[in-house]
Image (cartoon, rainbow, N blue to C red; front, top):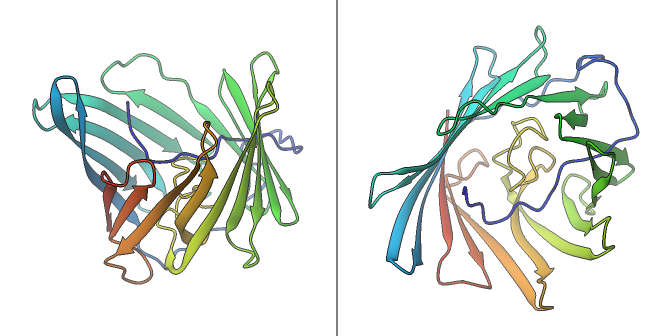
Amino acid sequence: MRSNILILCSLVIATVTLSSCQKDTPASPVTDRKYLIKIESTITDSDALGKFTTLSTTLFNYDASNRIKSIVEKDIDLSSGDVDFNDSSAYYYNGTSVFPFKSIPYDLLDPGSEIPTLYFYNSAGKIVEDSTEDVVHFYTYNPGQLIIKAVDHFYNLTVYDTLTLGGDGVNYSIITERDPLTGELALYEVEYNTTVLNPFAGIPPGIWNFLQFGGFNKNAVSKIKYTDDAGNPQTISYQYTDVKNGLPGKVTVTGSENPAEPLVENYTYR
């Protein structure tokens, strides 16, 4: 299993239905920035057999127009040399559009179960829907708020999340997750480092990692506060170093549940 410290957001339900993956021509994303090409981290963990170290690498490949062409994720057990995880996703575009209309994932360790995802956007270039044969996610944009819903192939509502913008108007500071089946609520308070840019801001929202909520936020997350299932307050802190042109070269992620084992990620750009 690939291990991310936090994936808060599930994908979404919007009230807008589009008849084509490229009904409108979305606005172009910011181009005067470096492009993230690699994330690398070394994680040490332990089990009944002892400690083991995993090298995790994510590679971002671009086409000649600086659009995401593929994302490759790999985990290698450094003690044995075994590849524990190796996935790749390919992205496809209509014409000169800067947003993909389709992606196809590939499990390189167990090929043959590729299920494509289709993406739909509004005229402002915001993603409003993505869908596979198993689930449809919708995004609804209200003033100061993004509502994320998902339905399965039986049309059951499985996700209902609300992201609320902070006073700066560019970063989501409150995230509420409601379980549609049980009605249980989870609340996350998010703080940002306003001197550091979100390293994923150049990647279209919805197509990859929600660690920084995809490209939804301008700045990098500095702290997330929440209450765990046992009712205990928890905090996840993000410390950025080697910052150039506003983009971090390194992030150290520390959780209050296990502060002795932080996650350290190194970012490479071009």
